[in-house]
Image (cartoon, rainbow, N blue to C red; front, side, top):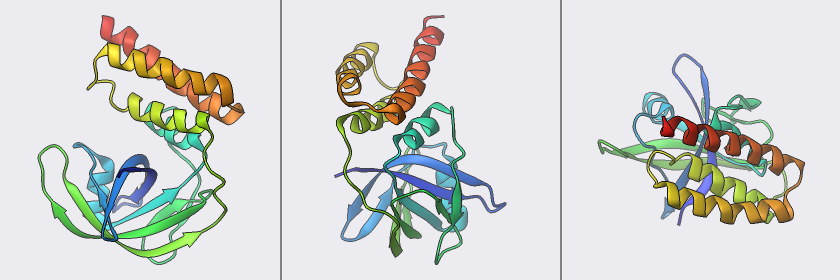
Length: 188
């Protein structure tokens, strides 16, 4: 099973990086598998630390994958020398245990060293889920055929039209602009 979360890391120089990422868990171990090249990959390898953030503001997902907004407020992690999203509902501090190398998508096996809850999770509405799926789709524009993208986008739009509030509409708008720009550029 893949869980869509936000991973925060820092470079050795202290530069923050925020990235949506699907993670897996096996026997209590968190597995990150970023595609190369990846700032998250570089930061985790260099520092040995990442933070998994549990966030219900879907603008973070959409803002990061579109580049519209990548800087979200962060604070220091509690136990490890890392950062977490200030406004997340909870977070897990992760320590790198081992790496399975791969030329395209290495696997980073991380141990949870601290879990904290900062707020209650009330669940995602359909529009929030659609924005997250839309963000995943946007992150794969160069990998998927146009027909697949169009079909998925139309289906996800139904949930936006029926259940979105202002936050989801803002996030969806960022994704829509990115999608439109991609198709304009790919036609040239």
